[in-house]
Length: 178
Image (cartoon, rainbow, N blue to C red):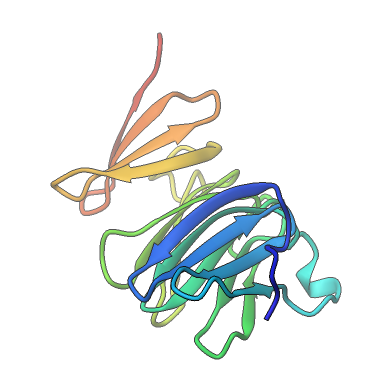
């Protein structure tokens, strides 16, 4: 057990119902036990497949497993046995900058990246990209995601304004200053 988080530059946090606070930093992920004060740090084994791991941009908990968006390393999954899986081949611009993760169901994770909007099923890892390749969604840099009471998504983008997206119909509307 460590007594310090992996890095002082904290980018995101997620609280779990088991009194664990997951902390995403510039250099990995730490888990703080709120009850005992004990800290455990997590980083995948260093190898060429894990390039870009260092800077965590966002993280989300789904069924006691951690999904981690990184600055250039794609999407990482930390399972209950604390093993990492890296998902990089889903993002078509090769950059793998995962800025935002959001979920309002038990298994679907919405992913905002510099390649637009994607979704992954946490149970099956089935992946779907909403982008210019299928003309459903504009390819933009999605940096934040929220949902409303009708399960529509609202996407904050870099330089493309706000985007409303209905996952059921695939309708989208760009709302910007012009």
